[in-house]
Length: 241
Image (cartoon, rainbow, N blue to C red; front, side, top):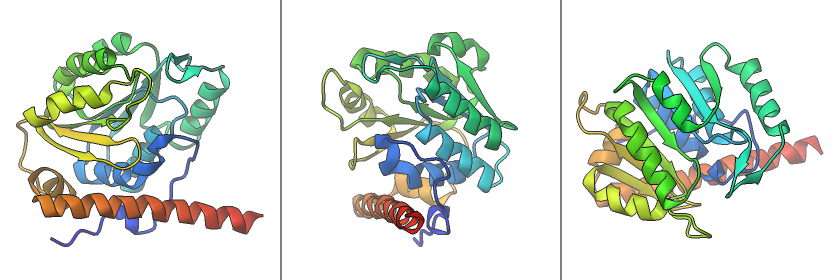
């Protein structure tokens, strides 16, 4: 299968802040293009790196989607507390670039749940508090909101520090679903809810129907894609200095 995703055809992240999600920016961009979602929800946005690459893909690939970021923007036991400057920066970027389709929901996850109908979310990103119990509760609470054939992504499924438990929950559920994991960086788990239309997009076929050899090549491809993005950022910084 020839795989030439949009991230290798001129993509550069418009919004950059420090985050371990930096390792997955090309994949996040390509996943949105492949899935063509109507509704995207991110649980745990903090400074906005992952959320805004999803929004950028929606905008640049002309996808008629609605995007929602859910966060208190106060911090937690893993991120540490932070002041209102983080939210103001996220809100300013959102207002300038994505206000037509993107909404910031400044609230607890459980307060946001009633805003979404059952089986209405096409892409759900779980990246809130990272204890085992919190990740499990987020998944169990929000999974009914994901449409059949929809995709759930979990950040930090390789992070085994402090009381992080996303890796343990991912290990429990991955074998019970169509799933795939990127091992580089802090890891990213990708899970597909059963049902829905047949998979047509090449990226989704590679993820959920690919052979072990294709999976290894896909992992290698996105490691190189992230490294290439880092090189572009370095070149841009050097040109400014």
